[in-house]
Image (cartoon, rainbow, N blue to C red; front, side, top):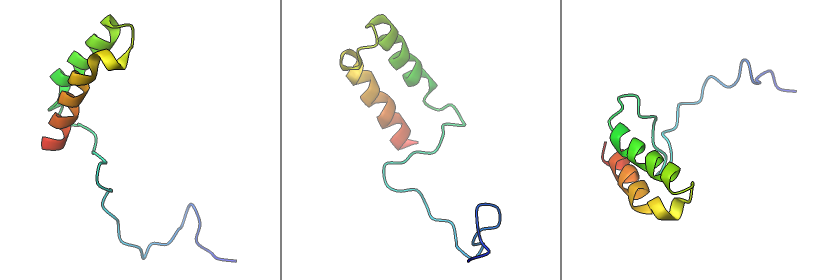
Length: 66
C-alpha cells in the first residue's frame, strides 16, 4: 500500500503544461467584448448556437491570440 494519496501525493513530479487547445482563464478580461457579443447573440437567437457561429469563432480567435 502506498503512502501517497489525494492529500500528500507524489511531490516529486514536475508540473505539466496544458495540452494544445486548452486556454487559461481570461483573468485580464481581454476578450470580454467578444464574449458579450456572443452571449447577446445566443439570447436573441433563442440559444441556437449555429446562428452565432461567426461570433463564437471571433471569440475563440481572440482567446488564441492573447
